[in-house]
Length: 144
Image (cartoon, rainbow, N blue to C red; front, top):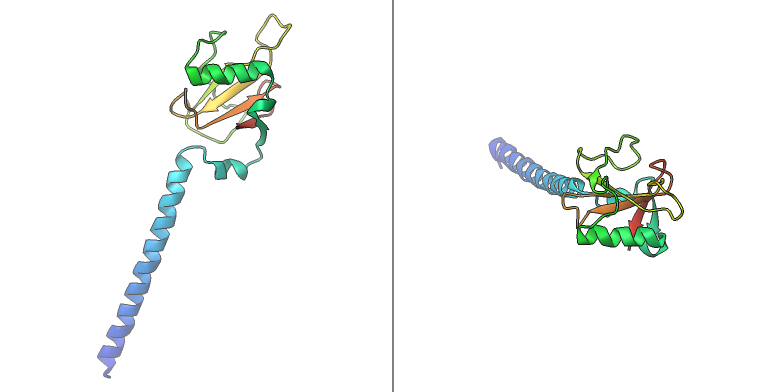
């Protein structure tokens, strides 16, 4: 085998190996980009956000979740308005991604501190919803 054919063979091996590596990297990167668009469960599982079962929410919170799925009607005019996530307690998203809803507190004549904040492009079918009972100081992911 001549020097030229040995070099050509090595070049082909490097080219094929490089293409295989590039293809694998692109496939992995594409998967990560698709998962990063919304609030994927893998993103949330690795975060510091605790969770709460829907059935463990107060009855008023369960009612608000049903109203969210039905598109209303809501008790307060601020319900469904954009939540700015200024406290940065929730995963970072573009402005307008999150919407907030009041969870009524029995015995109070005002909105109180309890809220449900949902994120996603479709308010009736959110990617994820979070419950706070301390006016945005802490959140728990609502799980079915």
